[in-house]
Length: 144
Image (cartoon, rainbow, N blue to C red; front, side, top):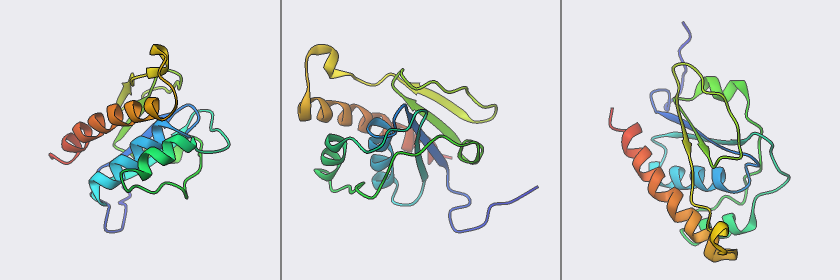
């Protein structure tokens, strides 16, 4: 039996996934990282990673004092899937199979563009929807 080493070995871990890993999963990871302050290991990835982060996602987090400017879209890997306690898929575009023993959820996040809301107004609504879900998830992950 292998045991992970390091100060965060007992910390719960979560992988946030969306299709491009440029917007929603980056929002969720940034929000969780800020909220958890190192008490949760946070990863994000995409099923079809894009080439860059969504500038509006970056800006909407910067408004909250969260800097994700150094992040970049990454693919989902077996290594990360096998290492985390929870996998959260944001939106319905990304398709991922649940893994046995790992908490798996699909968050059908708010999509304001379906109501004709675009730009930063859209991004604020998406961010705030994700933030409420992240706060709930954080409470559940750290309640043990």
